[in-house]
Image (cartoon, rainbow, N blue to C red):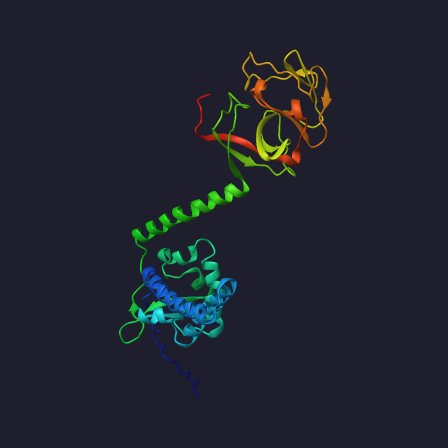
Length: 336
């Protein structure tokens, strides 16, 4: 008896069903919805203020909590806040499903806090994101979509492209807000402007010139000979002086016949002093009397030696009083 084996004809594979894509809400539509929601919340806050006298920090805290709960509950129950409903928008997951309570809460609290952290940059991100997601959308994997007149999602063939206009707007936003932020950080942590008052540093720096100083951390940075420093005046802590470092810790210094000697060598000051300039002693650093600079201290002098109140009169400059090092003149600068 012959054995036979039946075979089945292979069936052709069906093409995969493409994932549907739906129209997303643009930046202006989302902004409009946010303004409407803010006006609604403002009315509530005014009522609390008038009816119960709640104001100040209590109103601010209550406002923050109310805003989070407002957005969370409406998105969880309705899929949209009142503002979004009026503009036919809806919040869904990235698979176009309803948003859960936990995801809505995190989106409206931590997510929106992050979006607003750097001058609301996370909200403006919608302008250059193909899926029109703000940072809080990306964090919680949500989308804000448009609805038609029957409250259904609007299918589209592919994600919308980002126009040149939108990119330019985002770039201008960055210039308008991020540049001042960088300046603010630099001003507080790295650079600080000062104005010269008097002629003690003339001709290097003259009266009413504006100088930029890099801030020094006395714990880590050591000024060098020739540096021009800004420091709290030893004679008046309310004032700031600008002087040049002449000698550093461990150096021996003395003045003889109108010239400064450091470690028994005549100090070369031709880069910042005229050849005719002479330096004479004062009540602290007397003529032909040497002193040794102690640890964390400096000898500083003004370039206009005849009209400068400096270490020759009041002694060593403690390192802890140093504010910064002058880098350049940026305004009202004289021609040297």
